Every structure is written in C-alpha cells, then in structure tokens.
Image (cartoon, rainbow, N blue to C red; front, side, top):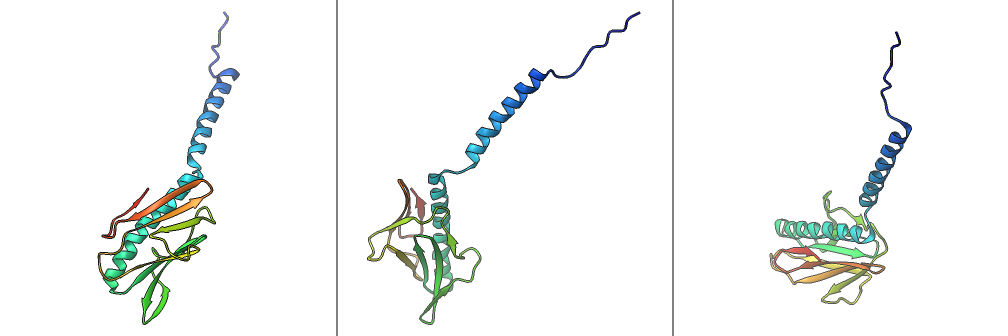
Length: 154
C-alpha cells in the first residue's frame, strides 16, 4: 500500500510574486515618506506660523517686546530686557535652521535689509499685518499675519 504525501508550501513562483508586490509597496511608501522640497518649505512655514503665535503671546504675557529674527539659514526669537536684545530662554522658541538652506526671504511691507529680517511683537494684541515669503529655487511658501493674532500658511 502506497501512501501519498501531499506537499504543502509555496512554490518558488508564488514567493517571487509576493516579494515583487512587497517591493512595490515598500517603494511607494518610501517615496511618500521622503518629503520633497515644497513639503519641507511648507513644514518650516507651518512651524514658523505656530512659533510666531507663541512669540506674540509671550510678548503680551511678559509685557516685553519679543522679536522674530530670520536670515537665509535659520531663525531665532529675542526678548528685549533693559535695552538689550537677548535670546528667549524657552525650548519652544529656541534658534532653528531651515530644512533647506539657504533660502530667499521677502517681507511685505518691504524692509531695507532682506538678508536679516526682524519682526517685533509688542505688548499690544494688535500689530501690523505682514507676509513673510520663503523661497528655495522655484518653490515658495508664505506666512501671512493679519495683525490681530492670526497666522496662516499659503
């Protein structure tokens, strides 16, 4: 009496098909996981927008002027105490670099020196509206302030 054994398992072809499908999925995920230049600019702009809101609130709470200073490589926040501008001692408002540097900056209304832009928040909740535009190659993004505490990214 012969006993027939039934082979169980995957054939080489089935394993290759699964590996190809897995490779395609992994490739699609890795392409989406690596942000492009525009996405990195937008991430920086969103972070700046939130930090500007925080700096504005900090100026009102401290009852001292707080400045946002930006150049082509990064940005920082300063507080004015006794006629001296010094870095804000707060982990959230620490000095940061752009993800893509150097960048081109422009501010509306225009300032004389666009290589080093400084925006000062006073003690009052109402301030002048502005648009800060950050450019890298042919990509750009803007941070718009309406003057009453709302910051948006465009």
